[in-house]
Image 1 (cartoon, rainbow, N blue to C red):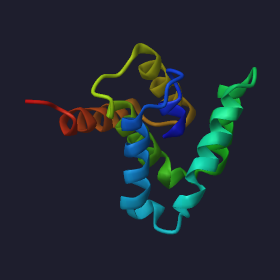
Image 2 (cartoon, helix red, strand yellow; image 1 turned 180 degrees about the vertical axis):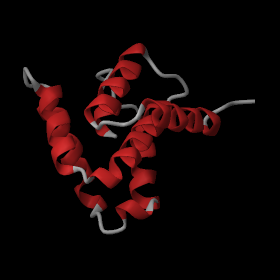
Image 3 (cartoon, rainbow, N blue to C red; image 1 turned 45 degrees about the vertical axis):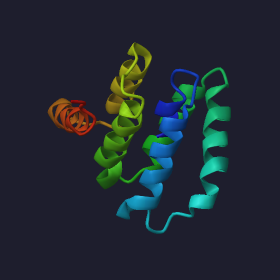
Length: 123
């Protein structure tokens, strides 16, 4: 989620709130210590500032994330991307890279993306 939020080099209040709400509200984070979130976000941003930072973060994510949670991670990344109301080309490209790195099937990714668009639609 932090990776997507930092993609356009600006972590907005909407994105940070979406991340915080997600961490506090979803069962997947039940045993997660939310007080560590700022430090984790800072570490992620720090890694991204290195020359091969994006690859390092993606490799770390793919290595540490259980296969059964990869679709969940992609869905949460899409949620953070949609938190601002529009998704930039940079963020769309990063979601594509993330999808490939996590080996998410294109049809599953499309279903996740469509569900997120439906959740963030405006009247």
